[in-house]
Length: 121
Image (cartoon, rainbow, N blue to C red; front, side):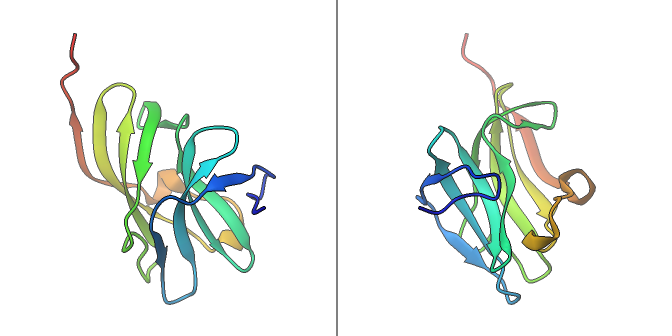
């Protein structure tokens, strides 16, 4: 069993893996406790970037997806997100080395696209 740094076990890795020249890997994982998250990792460990249930851009994350080219050689991770308030978008975050610990999502965030979907009533 593979576990996250906080001990949470990953249930499955249903999506693409992305790797950069430094050997850092980004991936989406289902968690045994429910929900999904995006993670970055290397030989030093794995760090959660964002996942369902997190607060992001003033609302709760309901979905996150990253493709096979989501992580570039500058350590920037791009991903699609959907929020409970109907907002969807693409975000880019700068991720430090996973072994460094704390991710600075707020500092590295650059929104490329954000729009509010009409909600069916």
